[in-house]
Image (tube, rainbow, N blue to C red; front, side, top):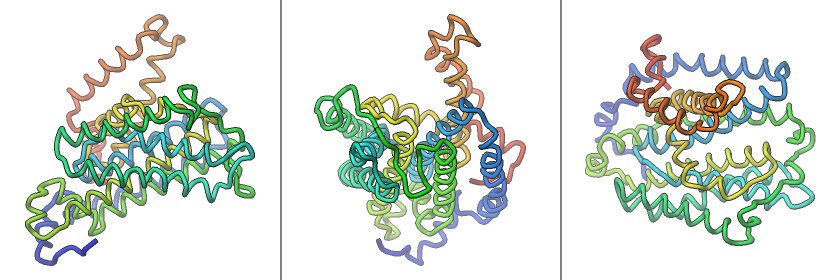
Length: 340
């Protein structure tokens, strides 16, 4: 990938994500995510099984949402096929484990690599389209992956397959609930930190320029196709990381992981939290999962819990109508200089 032309430095500096004020706010705002991660890490051993499992689920979905934020919020590419990479990461984890289990150090790169390779294939073709055509092409490729695992015996068909022994590497055994908790937390911190650094890099500035005005970036000499493809592959690999963690947590995977509604749900998380903010992706994942849990609990809502899709949909509509910038807008009102 070629370096950023010097002649375009002024143009990149004018993009919202690379302005000095925004960067200063982002660096200053790093304390809050770190404090939250530290608090979760300290509270981990004190939590009950239900609370611990729920937090692990939220953290995995946060990684999944962050991977899509790289495409939607940072690059301006709306994808409806992101669940394919999520599912591939999960399936590769189970298939490569076998009946005897697998090595953590091998399974994790395999899951992320397989998801990244499929993202490379999908991106190389879909990025030649734009707008609604790009959305439909990504959806089509995701459905192709769905039917490969659903209609063949590759992954156990529609019933899916079980992970009999979770990945391990010495003392790092994901059969242990505490170890799994901290591995997922470390993965979330890694993903968030990686994307935060990426936003402040020259590559991130180029993605911001592409999001604002791709034609202008191309005229300035940027290989925009290569930049978008690199972002697409990285997003797919990070979704594969989330898939690896999900398979390790649940011990079972099925084709529904790749269904279009999962791609729609993670897109809703990013929008609900607030586009263009890493915190927004995490907040959106937390809010969406909490709302889904609350509205589907009979102990709280009684018979209305049977219609949780309706109440959840209406609630999200209200949130989007009242908070056009997402839930992160509330944080910005309290702390105007908040960044990532």
